[in-house]
Length: 263
Image 1: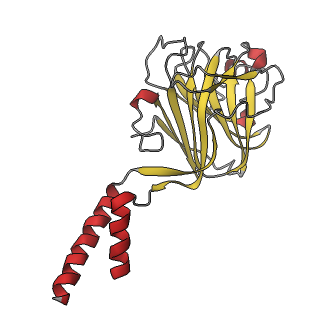
Image 2: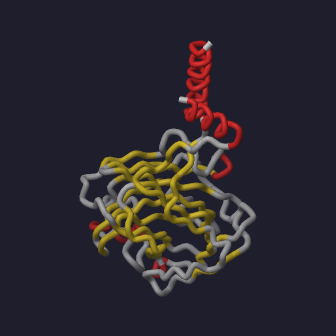
Image 3: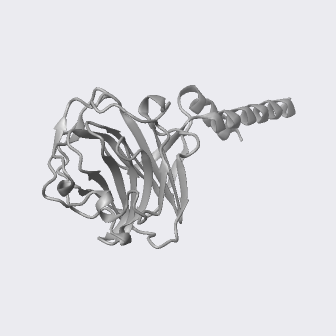
């Protein structure tokens, strides 16, 4: 009888372990901002940038609106997270014009760190650039510093989303950056195609091997290029563990607990 019981429990344990493997993943988020609590008070490096809360992000919730257009107003806005080395940075974006959103990461000085750009109609590309090459320079568009179709970028690849994308803030796009060691992976796709914001997004849009010049820890910021009337939402950052399996929930959790205590 004891042997049969042990065998039964062992089979149940194996079955539950398999279920855990199939459970959805979640991100161990260590920084997040959804703007539902009002203006976070982010201070842009460029005083010409003006941000304001809007209730009109395409997902029906509050977002953060960049209100001023023009190359002279381009630049980085630190989000207040200054200790990023390895992990994931993600945000949702919408467009009211044809220019680019981006993320600055591992920034330790004006000329030390990386810039990842989610291009739109003007330059339909993902761009990875080094701040040491003058990219993300305050008060200049990317093409003015040779970091868009100019040769100073580390990588520029067509984003594959097509041309003539909507510019009426009716569509949300998700951008994810995974920086682990010398590897930077970037995903860029319509948010409507994302089954879970913390789940698997499939194959990355681009993957790039850096020379390891900027390993962090450094700050994270949202970069905007000459954008007026464009919005962001749901900005979050994970630590080096990135996306990890969730703990079992509900009935599965109860069964898992009983089996562990029996064994």
